Image: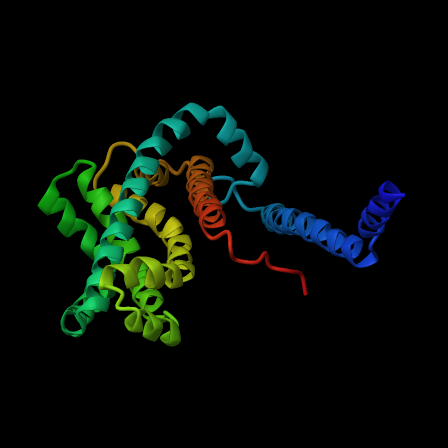
Length: 280
């Protein structure tokens, strides 16, 4: 009798219409996240192909997607050989720029005077176009990998600084007051309250930096480099090899996508308490 009593609720819970409907919605949401981007890519490629064929554009001006795909396969060794240094430069700049931004944001939050003095300086430096900063860094650091990493770090720095400052200041005022009542130190307040409140802002900045780091590395290679996606783009442009040019652009876009996906996976692993978004 007791066994029957225990089994009945389990069966009814498993057949609960609300639970079944919720699981179905989640299943549809997962497939929607996978299918919708694929549809967007297909529409983009079809529009590209239709314009090239319909307007009879010459291949040396704008190749078709099929020609770019053939070039990606035929020259895969060259493309892979050039994407590795760009990936290393972008990763180094991403880590360096965001780490420095987090440290400076922490200093700004705990010292309002320094914030008022140096934040406008950071804003002014960020207003300088990247193509203007790149030659200066190449002159200062030489033609090696260092200026490329520095350029990628600079373009990642300001978005992370702004978001991290806002995040650290976004801690709940009632929670802050409670921490003060409990005589918590600044270190305890930072690690147990401010840091957690800043994580959504930080990961938003990291998503932006994931693409900016690749852009910074490529621009740095334009100024002076013999290897890398940026150098390959310059060479393909001078040689009127539009298929290789577009292939290099596709590779840089794929690299950006890998960086963005890595940040998204890290965010999912760190912020486990955040609820999954639901479909409208």
